[in-house]
Image (tube, rainbow, N blue to C red):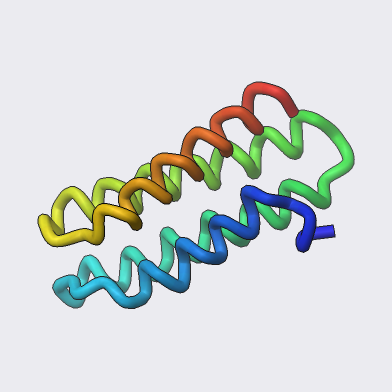
Length: 100
């Protein structure tokens, strides 16, 4: 099922690309946690049976994506394509939160 979940697949791509960012240690560790949280909460939410449960996990995922975006803002050296991917994923997750 996850192979057909486009937002999840994009978040996995983001996670792998975010791992290559050159960041101070404290931000690198936080980026690792936040970017993995995006993927994990999308996956968990997709497996929930009720709309409220889905929304809860999608909202957590959106918060983690916003955290990733803030880390990239703080780094001042993020790849513009990665920033664009993060914005796209954020928009997709926002839509999931509103429509699920």
